[in-house]
Length: 246
Image 1 (cartoon, rainbow, N blue to C red):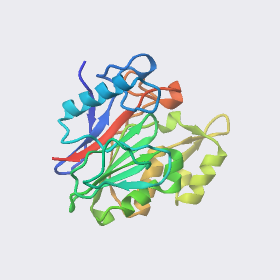
Image 2 (cartoon, one colour; image 1 turned 90 degrees about the vertical axis):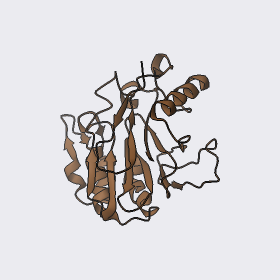
Image 3 (cartoon, one colour; image 1 turned 30 degrees about the vertical axis):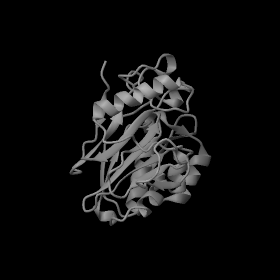
Image 4 (cartoon, rainbow, N blue to C red; image 1 turned 135 degrees about the vertical axis):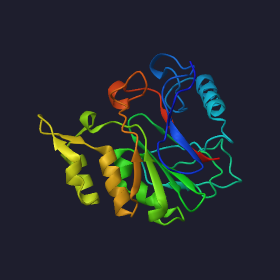
């Protein structure tokens, strides 16, 4: 079965972006089949082959700039002299000239892709709730040279509000972090909260002056045949959300 890609539906000229599903790889068991993460316990050989298949399917111009993601706010700005074999510890990545393939690995967290309508730069951010609340979106935009009004954003597959239950502690952190966050939490029957991760990301983007936001509206938790989901399955593989210029 061939690699399956959810292509970004946005008006970004000259940018190829999207998210892989779990379909089309060689990994087995809980990692089946297109696991692209090297840190989750899958075999090195399987991950290497899965990444080769992704590169072939997309005709990537070069190896993606994989990150060592830690749910933080650090943003890596790529340089032409760096090695793709030594992933930097960061949760955001910016390619100033758009020549690199930026990539984020997720299995419920929200992947955010950014590009400019006036500059060649492209970027991606890994938005789990911790990084999102701490400001990873603002930090990523701060490393871009474009005016926020010129930035276009695509939100990839992530856990939906219906599946993402959190406690008062998480809700309180967001209420203190961004205006109008209260509208992104619905109380459930147990007195806890269903959090809208994508809705919260939109608030952070708006706070930075970014208005051009496009959303795939797909839930990782609800579709085990196509997506990995850490909250649903525990130990599992990861999808990749990527962007590069052609």
